[in-house]
Structure formats: structure tokens, C-alpha cells
Length: 69
Image (cartoon, rainbow, N blue to C red; front, side, top):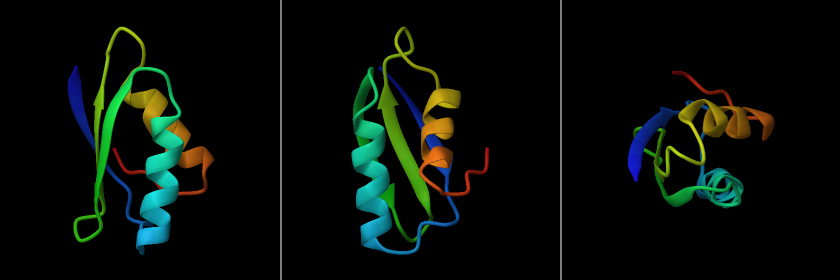
């Protein structure tokens, strides 16, 4: 497993965090998702043989959230 941190400045509440967490967890190869509302960061543990950070960023963007690399 590897870890990536994705900055999502449009996370503003726990409901947003929960939505993102649930959406990312549905992807194959995800080991865990933790969100820090204060820093607006999504920390994701993933299996690089199954998924890449770009796929995770694309998923978050498709849910209507701004993603900064």
C-alpha cells in the first residue's frame, strides 16, 4: 500500500467529508480514507497495482469537488 494526500479546498463540512470518503472507498484498490477538514486534505491508502492517485482525484472531481494537485 502507498499513501497520497489530495488537497480538496471545497470540503467545508462533515457531510462533504463523508460523501467523499464513501465515494473513494468504492474504488478498487483503496485501503483507507481519512479526511482532515481543517487542512482540507484527503489522505488515501491505495494499492498502486490497482489504482493511481490520478484516478482518485478524478473520482473526487466527478463528485463535484475542486481538487488541487
